[in-house]
Amino acid sequence: MKIATWNINGIKARIDTARTWLASANPDIACLQEIKCVDEAFPREMFEDLGYNVAVHGQKGFNGVALLSKLPFDEVAPRLAGDESDVQARYLEAVVSVPSGVLRIINIYLPNGNPVGTEKFVYKLTWMTRLRERIKTLLANEEPMIIAGDFNVIPTPEDVYNPSAWLNDALFKPETRAHFQALVNLGLTDAFRACHDEPHRFTFWDYQAGAFQKNQGLRIDHLLLSPQAADRLVTCDIDAAPRAWEKPSDHVPIWIELNV
Image 1 (cartoon, rainbow, N blue to C red):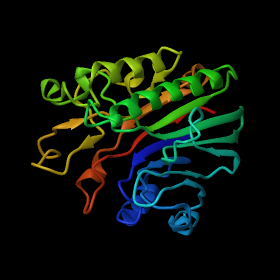
Image 2: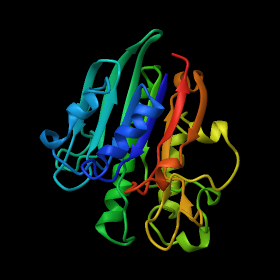
Image 3: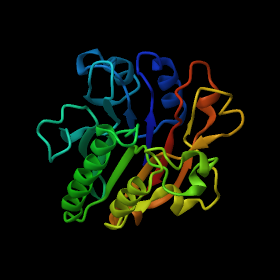
């Protein structure tokens, strides 16, 4: 089974790009972030035509996550537990049935957190604490689980083109990295790092100053696996090709294959 995650940076602007990649790469499940539309405005029929079931948790003009699955959803639950007042559309959880049992997919668009020293950074860290508590609860189920999405976290200096330039950015602050490591320390596996140890493999390049052409990027999109999912991991890779297409997202897909 092939599972991908991709911050699409606006589904309306990137509909043709998304359909082209999905038709070619043919993932069984795709997690999209930053769709930037309400549920009703998501072009679900364009993906249903490719054989996908569609689940959406959207928000007008900002944020928003969507799940595309060639398997029917057994369960779908939007919103991250822990703060009923939080209306930002950043979390979508679903369960599908696979030959070995069930597979739980969690699609996240973690807050950016900039500028540091503001409520945005506090919200980021609080959101990460809530995510950790939710994952801790779910791990007790001892089932294959994937937490996929745009984490807005640069885990290590090897995951950014120029670490010194990012020391004061919310994506690379020690507090952010510590929260990410605390999540991983629950027993999760970073799928990309389980398959690759080379530095400077990125999932994001800014639109400015020829960043993609210069490979001045960041690895901030991740697939974290529960122990039961990690046992089934076959491979993981980043597909940088769509970043060179016309009207690209500033992120590219990252995908895994699992034996399920």
